[in-house]
Image (cartoon, rainbow, N blue to C red; front, side):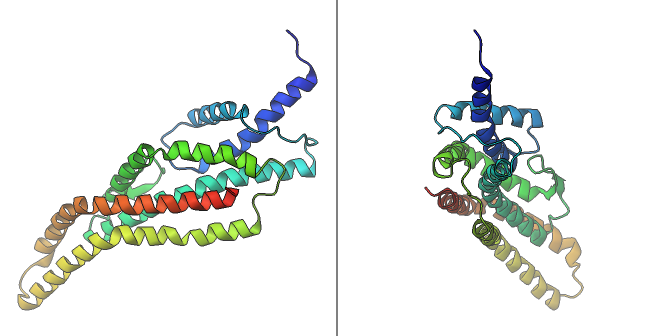
Length: 257
């Protein structure tokens, strides 16, 4: 069996362009781009997804290698993949920020661990929320939906077309508002409950100045926060699903579905 140079070039071309978009998405997306997953495993995943998609994707255009049009197409594929993954990542960053707000208000901000998913130091409350939302994301089939959106994007935003424009960049920047809105929606119930406890101890300190609030108030606030956290999980799941739906809607509008 022999292959011509033209056949090999066509196969490489058919693999190269989808791999750029899928690889960029894998780097930026939650779960896929986790620091806990080895770089070799992420590369293997991107190659496997690309090979699986090659059979259903339209044939890419043949561009002169290293020409201006070729470099423009390379940049566009990477930006499209990064945008889809980054928008989903903002949903999880909102969860982390909400957990940090709760931890700081409850006096749990000092309890930090290395987050294996993000590779930074985060409060234990944030890690607890991220683990739960990651399991929920996988249970809802979010990873499969993201791959489906990437496959669809090759039909609506084919290779060679300008998909990432300054208007899209502005829309992504404006979408960052949802990060803070989601964080506040998650943190507000627990924060208000902790605030009531702090106000109660403030009133006690005015009526009994000799009472050592640092010895009594801090442990009480910690115990109350630990008791309130399980009660906020249902609301957190609802907020996460709502923010996830908004992220899917943004990605669908971005790729023109």
